Length: 454
Image (cartoon, rainbow, N blue to C red; front, side, top):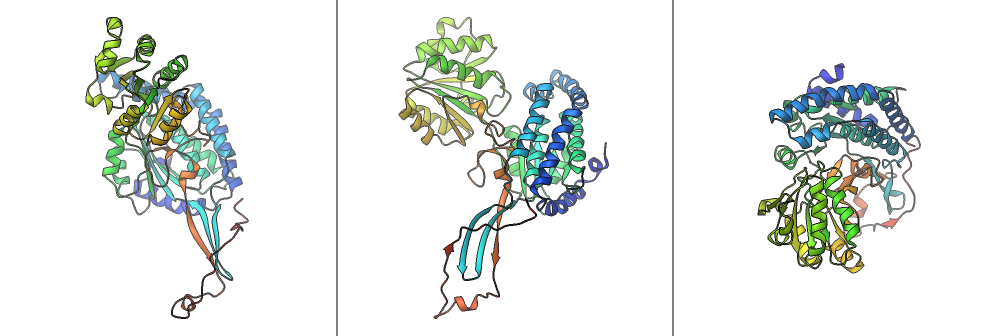
């Protein structure tokens, strides 16, 4: 275990803050070279990473048997060659992305020789707290490096060996060549570190928690640092009366079964009453074969009553409509049309991701416009709500907030901006008073150019 892992949290935060100033001004080419080295190193050291992960999985399996760890967290923990390759591909995709730092967002002439530029810049120091999934460490660190942000990483104890292995791969590969400042990435160790981290508003600019709704709410309630995240992923698919039912079967199966332990998996299926008799028995049979427990409304129970002995059905409670299961459990409700579906989603949903299946474009457009979620989809699985799949290379998380960043947060969500005013001895006095000089406020097409940045 390296010295950088053993230092105290305040010292790590100070080092990250110092490194962030230098990292903010590292050239794009240097950052991209570091990212490609990280991808190559993950590939070269995949056996070491998998061995570390196997140790975590073995302990986690025992914790599941003991009842101290949930099965969804165990599922998220596991790595294999395919997930390692996804990490590698993700880092390489981040390297290919346009650098969001140093872009001129606007330029305006205040007066002759007095020009104001709004230029994108890194946020500074990101504190990332995540449960179980070790690939999150790679996603977040690669995006922070690309955007010039230092990062403090705190993963769950169940993934400690995996996180340490990946941390050292990222840290060492980035350091080669001497272009990336030391200290930009730090790994925290204990649960107590999280409590201390929440107090470090002097050093940390933004917290990104990834985990259960209860976990994210704890972070939000116990810090004065800005938090970017979502409380829960209560995602819906609505099957409309004009849906292609074969398409709907595929989408509803994928959205629930393909990977149920993640925040963009469907938790509630809404079915138009006009096609419920035709559709529900078919999707219920597919869910039965996949081992999905179904918690259903009275109308769904009535329609499936003939098959009740063959299908795992339970009456849905009011609490079920508010529940993120992260498991092979789904709540099902029959609704009277798109307006009823929209009302249900806006009442019970978490603003994460919701989808409609229909061949009626007018109905689809109404759904897309009136459902108040960060991602809204037509004829596609909710599982597409992901930074990598959205072409962002990776994501630091999915935000259901409506300030600064929303939905899967990629590079553009990790930059802010500063104003740069270029004058020639200008002072304010001539612009105030009865005979005040007038501002020109003329829009400029020019860019604020930092020659060494690219």
